Image (cartoon, helix red, strand yellow):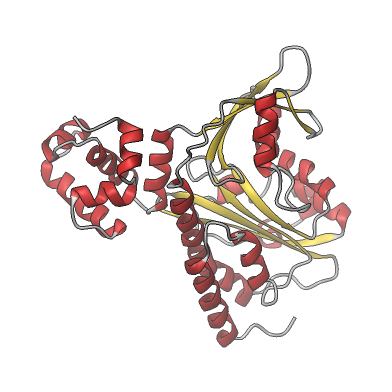
Length: 354
């Protein structure tokens, strides 16, 4: 790899920012990010994830260099095995975590490295999440093979600079995707996930949903379904996750153990409008209390009513309103509702006015 100069790092940040600001709903954002960063920070294997900002669970992935057989054991270790630098532990920390710096003996200390990465000839690992005040929007994991140099200070600094840019890019797509009119109301469907990760429809509606959850290419192997399956097999058997279908709609996956087999039953249904409203507010970077105020606006609550409901002063509510206006680029209550939810969407979430 050529030396990463300050000028090249600046050009990379600028290029990634332009890409994130101009990407459309149809753009494969994760693949585009990997394509732009890999020539500057080389890796032999890597994964770029999007996550549900309220749970940090994985909803989509661009896999670069890993064979498909790696996916199931990776998900199992990440979600069920205590280890070094798990993404749930990195979330919100702003830390770019290097395996060799966080444990003296990775083979002995890290089950993920010992059982999943080292057998594939991988030695070096760097991990980080991409976060903002509304939650964790994605995660990045990069590896280099045995005998290669580890990730250097300039490369780690560049990853740290890219993290908030990537978070804004994922948030921006989430705003546009969550606002799509889901006129095609597919009903709930049932999908079965076996213990080894095989996915098959359990009902006709499940088959329809599965066709909308298939990977874009052979690199992306049912990220959301593997997430809920791995999580469920390591817990009491239940899990819940929001993800995006191929037609742009957000869907919710509910997983539970089957009664008469080792399968996990996944119920897939359109994400409820109030959850989409919360996602939209998060995607605009609103804090938890600012989201409460924005939802109050959509319900038509007065400043006094919101103050009473939130147990704060009217002055505090006005401060939150100012923050909502600033972050959404609006200047009035009605404009917030129109911009954040759209007139159609607000009616769908809360019912007609009055």
